[in-house]
Image 1 (cartoon, rainbow, N blue to C red):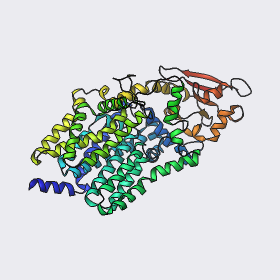
Image 2 (image 1 turned 120 degrees about the vertical axis):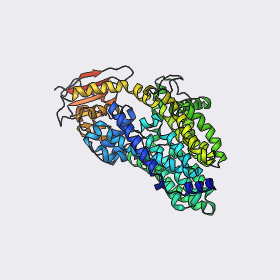
Image 3 (image 1 turned 135 degrees about the horizontal axis):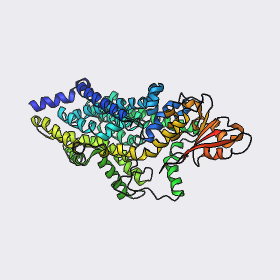
Length: 517
């Protein structure tokens, strides 16, 4: 009788009953973000720097406005950063981009806790899943930076939670909330697009007499994200699939790499390797003990009739295996060729699935033993990092360190050179990308530059610098359009000279040019 009452109570408990979990999450995540900032790691990921600067350039550019959202990267993370990066200090420190990440990760953990507690009718199962999820050092590192993964995890957890509610209530309101969560996911990362038809199938399967209406409500809201992004690309770039096949798409970058003689990505049209590389990345991100606990937990979840939750959370890892196979995404891990770190963090998408498995294992135990088992499983999940408490074992930190070493060096040196010499209003001609970090580090507003987000203004200067280039300074990566344009300006009535260049191993040569006549 006690177990049944506990189960019923756990199932029907409102979200407010989980405020203790929310408070603990807030403390842990804020402490992690503070530590990361104190160590100077907030912007080590190149993507973190880029996301921060894309949000900033929307209102801090020569040509401000909506079009600065750009293409390829989805817009919601940048929109959420907007209120924070308007502060010069929050932008220059990177904290303005980290704040939304922390808030999203806290929300993700809380919703996962609520979902697992509801699915398995067990408070202990919710706490076990939360501990496995929120004490992972790779997740805590990423949530301390302006990366998109925390928001993606938040959207996935929200979708799971409202699907769990719908199973009990059959409410169209819960279907609508799930659709809104899915829509936010589709405006954050492309793997959420892959989820939509399967999630719609969930409502058809469990909607009872209202299944068609529930599926229609979910789908009509969830589809708004992809439809908006297709329209955005059509209006601004005259191609609704610009993000997929445009100049800066993953597909085009890969083709340029192949044309330059680079080897094919591991897993390209090879299912075995695609699985091997993703499984290796996932194990590095969540740890071997949690990997095996997750596998055992899948069976436990099915015993508890929660196979639908396993399937829903397994779709994102499945997307990455498919993406590796179709050459859309490369993942490199240190133990497999080419023995480096690249997109290793994508393995973290298996964390919610593994955490669900931990919750399922806890729920299999009799009520009185669940609390003790939850503690043991949580300890097992974090044991790799407790046994070896070194940051080098956090693969996401290691990835950011290795891949940013060159960029951090030339950003620091170029900013130190430019800061005391640049006069407001002189103007800087540059691409956007990594070089924008020089402006942030030097405390120079982005509006002082003419960059690729300025559309025709930038294109005309790159094509005919003799007619349209009036800026005094320029920052180029050797061989890019800016560098090629300035090399044509070494002679003539308006001459430029390369006054500094920075060559760092495994990085492009960075050039600073100045008008000399």
